[in-house]
Amino acid sequence: MLFRLLGSVRIENAETSAGVTSAPVRGVLAALLLDEGRSVSMERLMGSLWDESPDSARKNLRLHVARLRSQLTAFSLQERLVTLRGGGGGYRLLVEPDEVDAIRFKRLAAQGFAELRARRTGAAEAALKESLGLWQGPAGQDCAASEQMRARFAALDELHLTVRERLVEARLGLGRALDLVPEILDILAAAPFRETSWAHLMRAHYLGGNAAGAISAWTSATATLSDHLGLDPSAELRELHLSVLRRDDDAVRDPFSRHRGEGPGQARPEPAWPRRLLFVDGKSVAAPAAPAAPAAPAAPAAPAVGRPPA
Image 1: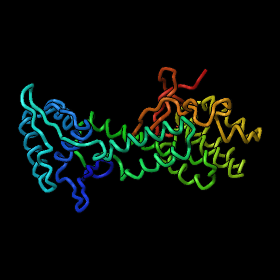
Image 2: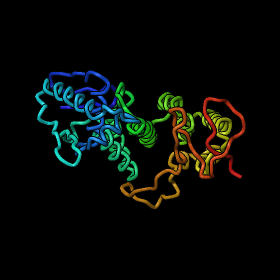
Image 3: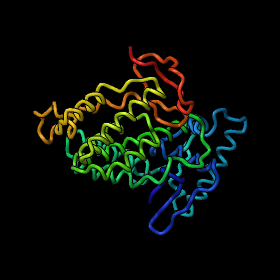
Image 4: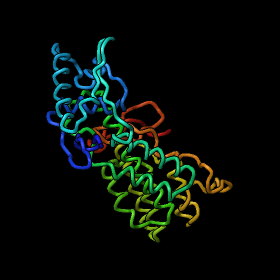
């Protein structure tokens, strides 16, 4: 049995795959699944569906739950949806972690991140690749959802980008290079302010024998950050640029080469890039540590969220 949230909201078993009809019913199912089998109060469910609950919210919610239970019956799962009595009421959907694609996705992502920190790149690649195999599109498509629940979907979308970046990092560590450029460019098309991916692009070009491509990627990165955010590149990205200019193959290949005393199974620190990320018009944006202030006029697609360093 598999409940899908990553893409269209669906219920699947070995024989059948069925979408959940009506946006409010999809929203109820999504809210229950996001709480991973825990009890969810009526108030919390209403807050997941509506920014401002209508007067008929409780009555409507009970109707949506009844329709969800009816659709679960087709899979003989109606007993999984438990009605809670007392304390204002609520519901609980009994699911195992591996039955929910979003839970499996997060677990495998965390496993891949841990393997990468421990420099076990082969194991990291396997876990991250399996995690991405569960992704079928932006989370919670066509659900009735409040701003609060949309933020939970957005967190899954952001994690998806991070998993893609970490998979690229693992594959760079395994010796791949220029064949990764299309994937990196695709990530940057969706999120052009992620310094991690700009660093990966520089490394992929350089390690593939295209030093000029690495320098071109640096130029594009600095122009993107400056023109749209009024920011200079991070110290880590500048250090990588210097390694490219010095033709320091080891430093480009392993940005953590200063920790050479670590054994192959020992953890190494997280990369300092990207800087703290925000969402602007649905895209992730690197935000400076300094207080927000207007940037110099630039392309209107991405509002400024910080000011250039002094």
